[in-house]
Image 1 (spheres, rainbow, N blue to C red):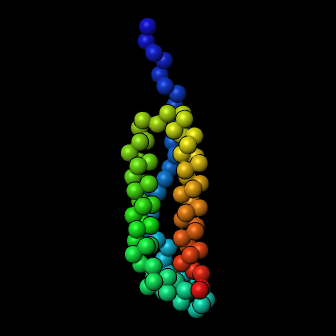
Image 2: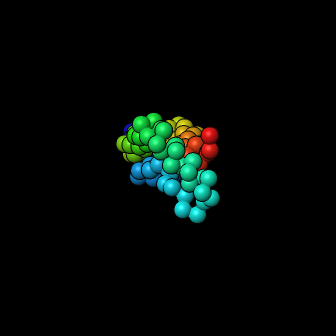
Image 3: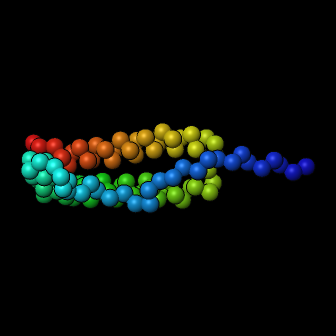
Length: 97
């Protein structure tokens, strides 16, 4: 007796690469200066953050073909967390201290 095929999982699409937010071109001078200061003061931390975000994307891409329904459900929560982290980094780079 053969096993039934595993259920098909709807594919999640993720970006291939995460890049730090760029300098906002149409923002006020205060926001542009805040971005410059953040890049100057937190360059090593931001580089580490970018590498960690890309590592997450690599792990998700590597497990795409072996995804179970349970894993797909967890990826739904992970994708929200990824988006929140990305948004937090953008807000951090535009905040004035």
